[in-house]
Length: 108
Image (cartoon, rainbow, N blue to C red):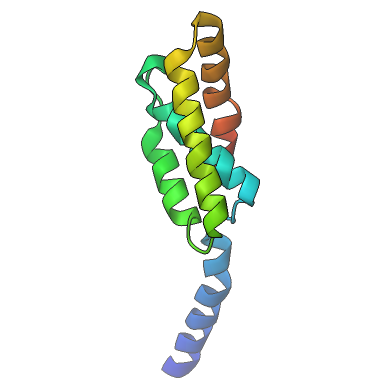
């Protein structure tokens, strides 16, 4: 009886565990998430949720090709530079990106 219960519990957990795992981002979404992290960290754009993007990138980095990780790093550097040099109109666009498209990545 205990063995049957244990087997049912193990089967339930085995089926439920993949459903709880975060879906894997595509390579382009991973690069975008890295850009979003840089926008969230940019002090010139105001407060952003950089910790959420850091956690997302950390979990999604596993198994990525080196050139994708390098591309993501380049996108983050470019976004940081854009945020530093942005005038008021460009800042508004970057904030809209951070608070719109970037938040959609976190909601996945």
